Length: 399
View (tube, rainbow, N blue to C red):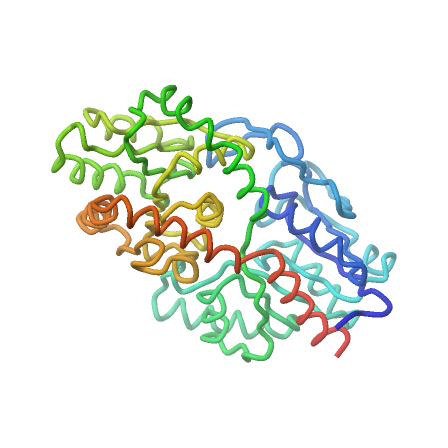
């Protein structure tokens, strides 16, 4: 279906996000979807302190190119993003000025987003909600689940359509009483082509990068890439790695590369002391990551709480087999046990060690799993996102 005239769509999100900018550029290419991104903060478009990484960083990919955008007016500081900050205003006036026909909101758990949803409701403009909520990542008591269900019922009065990032997210909506016909698939995806091409271009650098890291050329590699914080469970991975490699002769041990930085780096380095096959590579920016994915045979994400985990998408585009915990949202949709990797119970160090042992036991099978990852991720892309967004707009704006 094509929209004539084009649908005027507002997308509200806290700040420009490195994962989302390519998707916004892709949607902007659609001639019949007139997209404008509305940002509450501009913190990410310059050097800023990231608490998760524990450092000042500046993204090395364009965040504002290729699509129309505006920054909402705000009172006070704009360099902090939280549930209340920045204190934006004027969303109703902007909706009127721009003549938006639909409002797409990324997360409802922000004051600015709720204000925008209320403003849209008063103007009878349909709201589309994209959220990360799932039963995988949010463990609650029976009382909290009951309260959440009531809160969702109130939220539902403001939302016309839900954009599901994956099957666990979809099931969460269904469990909270959202009708199936109001949920549209808009999967969490990355710029597959960019990561695939960048990894391919980086493959000739593998010997040099291994040499820089002090890794013998013939050794297989496991990689993890994430902020060094508790939820990512690097400590579980290091403990499992110690068990795993301790059963192998020194000359047959794979190497583990940990990419990332954060407040737990010192503690993790101490935990890895004495394991000669672990390397900490520090923070690596967006353009540097594909070279590490290209180096790896296996990507590991052991998180104890991970609503999705877009690094899994990125690694699959480089042809990595995947080992993920059952608390990683992406695992449910993208990891097929025994086909392109394995899933283990989060927090179980022995199970993680056994999975590492099984995957590295057969190099040919591991390589085939990597090829399967590349095949699977081709069907989880921005094209599916555009199709899902179109379906939502057709059902709520131009029925």
